[in-house]
Length: 329
Image 1 (spheres, rainbow, N blue to C red):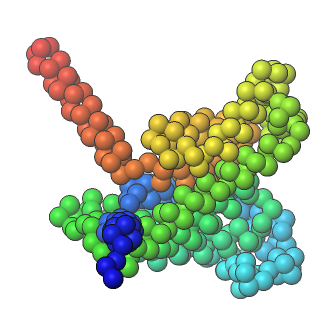
Image 2 (cartoon, rainbow, N blue to C red; image 1 turned 135 degrees about the horizontal axis):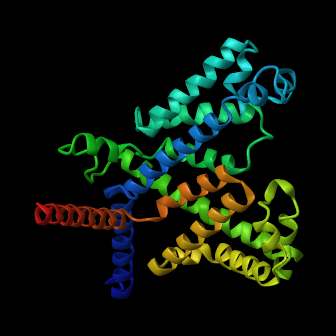
């Protein structure tokens, strides 16, 4: 008996679709520029934390600091291992702290590739677990993303800039390519889940749908910047707009990613939202980590277009400067 043509066509289409999907995730690496900029931004953010708190490092993370070594050892366990728990010696603390700064610098320049990302994860996790109560929450998403960066190829762009003839970024089927694309997809999915759950959580709270959430937030001295926050706190229109726009964009974020216009609308909102958090509430590292993570939402072709536009603008300025000099001589 001859097979049903409809069944054969359906099976052929399914096989072709599966082959296309495998070709996309295995054939070439995506978000190369976004992942590289993410690596650089994360490294700069951690350097900012290390240097802005450098004079107070002993009080914040030292053996005799605010979070004592004995308390630290009592709360430490295998899942939150820290290099600082290996010794309470002050010289050892200085060594690990400054070694972490050196590792971060190497991480920024893309040294050691995936192993460099693993070292960065080890040192920043060690610093966070040494005193888990002082950071502002940006470290939570940062740890998840750093884990995925140990699988992604975040230094390929730097390698290509150093060796333009290198084929390091060339498309090709390999396990490394598959792991890179899986890591990129995991970062984007994690980001979408974070925004969706955050928006749903806000939607269930009375102060957010009543428009009074910002009023209560700005009542906390640590999360306010007088006199600007005093002015905004008393504005009912600002409270309503801030609450409803935040909930809408956070809940709709996964859907907005499906279209180019929606994605750019969300990126503009994210820039304004996290910029306001850094400016008005003082949560600078949280805002920096979130904005850095969102760099993977921009495609390589879009980064290439921006680069070409900047190069054309530079050349135009150079030509204009040359013309001005020639006319004045």
